[in-house]
Image 1 (tube, rainbow, N blue to C red):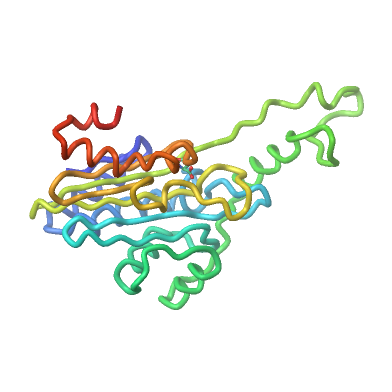
Image 2 (image 1 turned 45 degrees about the horizontal axis):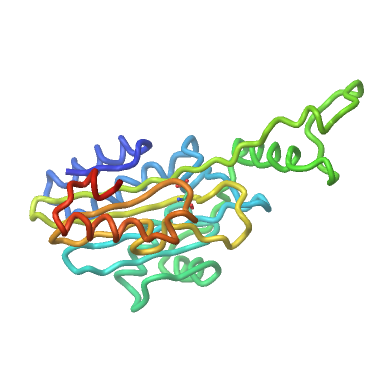
Length: 245
Ligand code: ASP
């Protein structure tokens, strides 16, 4: 069984396919979300994700493995398309749980990951629109004609996009694992880390109980560590829905 956020239909399909062939739940969910990370049309995850306020894509991701209760994560990593794979390597090939920024990039490169530009033209155009519409008190202007007298009046309300993918699965051995990966809050302050790479907030699993993960406004989750709370409420006997609520 695999479950994900709404943007993960292809991820759960892939995960279940691999699990049917005997894959470990963690390998299955990571392979599933890699499809979404690679997809430039999902502008909330991986390649093509919305950039930070400087127009630079910074990604967060984490994995958790039920049978060993180990976890790995990267935050604010630039130029690497599949942060979920790097998070898994942090778990498997380091004695740390979370590596951020420049250190995360160097760790990824040490493991053979290639740096690439993650900013697509579509994401850059959306970022530029946001920047141009942000304020009438700076020098960035949205496109307009010479007849437009009141630039402030024509500023369209800009939209702060959110989105992420979480995927949890249980494999044929009954083992549970999960992954969360995201480009985070669109136009965030550079270096901002959301809930997604924080174990207990953006995701959590306990092999005896279940798993949970999140999307949405990360700051709200960071102060509540909702994923670990959900798993603990389920341990106490609440249904998944009641535990989430
Ligand atoms: N939870 C993510 C974050 O705050 C963003 C999202 O899911 O929309 O970084």
